[in-house]
Length: 216
View 1 (spheres, rainbow, N blue to C red):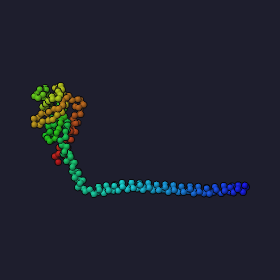
View 2 (view 1 turned 180 degrees about the horizontal axis):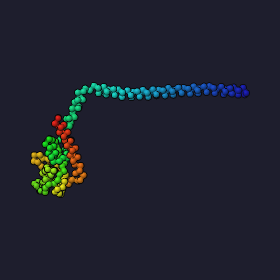
View 3 (view 1 turned 30 degrees about the vertical axis):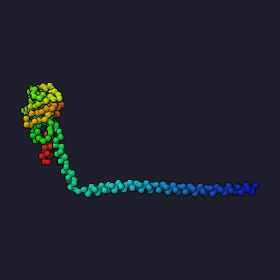
View 4 (view 1 turned 90 degrees about the horizontal axis):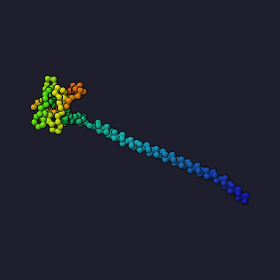
């Protein structure tokens, strides 16, 4: 019995070194495999990043090459389209602040352009009834006078007071020398103070517009 007990004791003592050796080997294998997998993942991520970068870089190089290959003639042609685009917008509606004299001048020099004029002038006559639901009156701006007509089609003409400044918006009929109003009302104090500045701005814009149109 003592001999069997001693053999079993020796077996127990000899087993742990083998087991510990096996465990160390297994740990080393796992560590080595994890290092390989992590390095492999890093290389894959790096390659994917390079692959993602290369198309963008190639695309940018392609765009740069294409822009360099475009001849200068096409650029000149594109630039030449701007006056044509400007010319296509000739018939767009414009409201021009003007005195009576400048209104007649711009109407004469921009006959093909649709213009609505805004004038501030003093009512210099009584309002009279005319045919086709019209009302006529006379406006004065310094030494210049302007016959006006307003048709009461969708609304009535408001009460106008002779001797006061009124704001009239409409189209000037150069052939018949009459201003066809679409809106008439008394002018406010602020409008009277700022009107001359608006007239100067409108004159500058119309002068530039007529010069450009004459060059086309």
